[in-house]
Image (cartoon, rainbow, N blue to C red; front, side, top):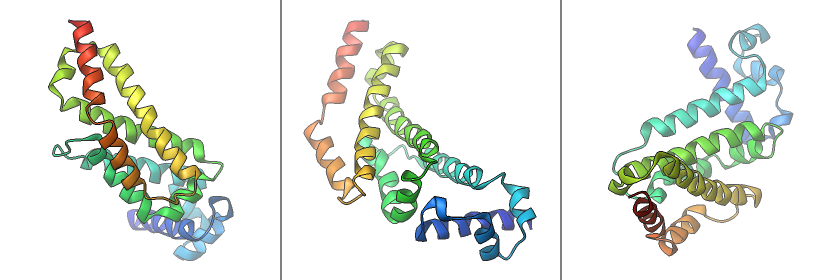
Length: 188
């Protein structure tokens, strides 16, 4: 029963977040929708921000766990995240525009770091690069991705980020590998 209750609380919260901003959702509203009492909510979560953080952790963990070895580009690594954002547009916008944005940013950074790192791990050349240099390269490209996503979110998600990211990847194709190659030569 506790697992079912916890899942029901999360599902109800997401459903409400699809309809209204985060700061307009109350514990009272969640428990009434779930048909449980307040104690049941507080048994599982300290407050709404802790509920949100658990959901963000689970979604980030899901993305990291389902990352496939078949992805041959950063774009392919990110497409599932972008698709998730499109299919949960209202939820993402309400979280992004809330006081809990810092929590959202932490998990966005984690996902983007993972996407870049998992792509780099597939490249043979990264074996010849010093760890500090590789970390700097991962951080640089992660910041690029986070910047594109933040710009998209800040603009209200009005354009198709999949198309924009695909085009950016086409325009800069080989630049990442070229930078890694230069780095490997410096380290040789």
